[in-house]
Length: 222
Ligand SMILES: [Zn+2]
Image 1: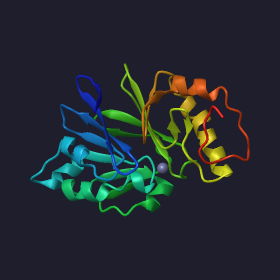
Image 2: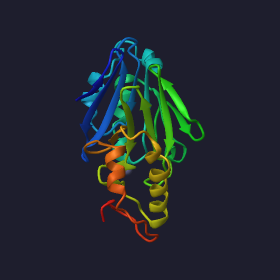
Image 3: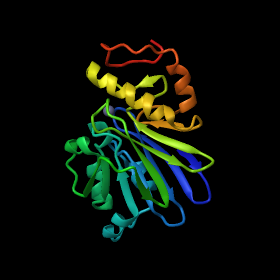
Image 4: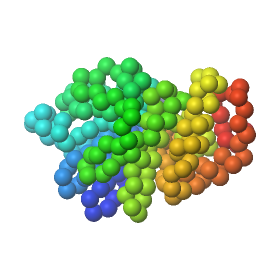
């Protein structure tokens, strides 16, 4: 599904895997460079749409990069098939979440770095611990449109699931102090389901009253 297109950049969304995960492909149509965000199970459509060299897979490493929002299995399950088809690639993931991986390409563990540059786009890294310790959101500003790939950190209606109250405090602070400072028109593209905007999400958040002892599936409108 095509989400956005300008003269140079195209963003597509794919849904696959048992938990209906989203993956995203940001590609530069003039250079054929691209960034894949998350690789759920059965990523056949994603692979088919990725501009790649079928005859010499070693050429793919320079043009195609992978960014993972967090290490939960449903966001990385398709990596085996992807590396079989495209060869080993460079993969970015939050430092702590790299432990979930067993990947044959180059794993770049993100920690203090602020941005990565791929396909001539600066991708801002926003570290958002809570859903997992190494959750990272990827923000891109294409002037007329801004996108946040939020993984399982922020969804329409509220935050992603947390396993205890300490992690709920972390995700709450990540969202409140980092994601909610982004421009209001930013389109939030989560790891499952539909998109929202920072503006709409802030509107839902207004009613939320933080309590120290809650966690799990929390909605801002509880
Ligand atoms: Zn998750």
